[in-house]
Image 1 (cartoon, helix red, strand yellow):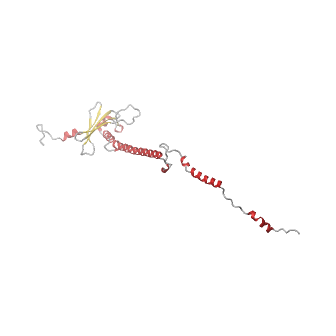
Image 2: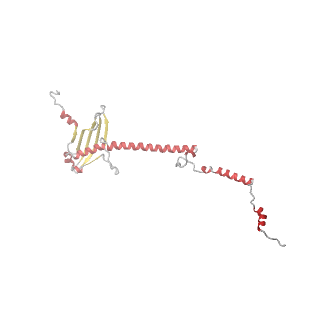
Image 3: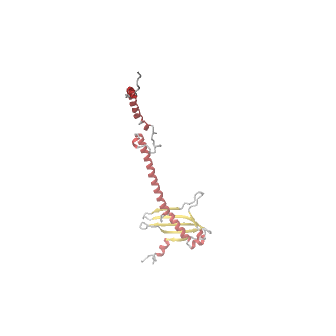
Length: 235
């Protein structure tokens, strides 16, 4: 008698063999995984130790303050203090230069302003233009210089204060026209009660000619003085 093949019985027969057997991790594998995690944790902070050491020269501010060592913090503090000092010095020097420019050039009481006003006054005086020439061609300059590079010649001047508190400004420079050359003498005073300088003497000397007075305070005072009778003023 022949046997009849039944597929369902064959499946039930092989079913236990097809079951998945759960794998238990061995002690070696668990130790390896634990050691690997510890290795990763140990190597993660080492990446920060590989950065370049921060010094005063190479510090660019990229490294955070909390990540710096004591020596690196001192280096950064030194660098920032030095930079701040440079900024302060630059501000002070800029202020000093601005003050000097205003005092010597832009101020109405500066030597340059007086120099320009005196030159204009000479160009407008008929006596000066008669000896020097055309007013539009008259030029003024400071002390002669042998240097080719000295474009602006130094204007000789002195400033002093007497015992009464009056400031005295004296200047000397040169004028030149198509006909002649001359030397200009300026004496100005400013009393404590005055805000601006006042001319005492403004004279031009041209060689071979008498001195030309454009301003002469002594002469004006002599004209305004009361006449004397028997050598004395009675009023």
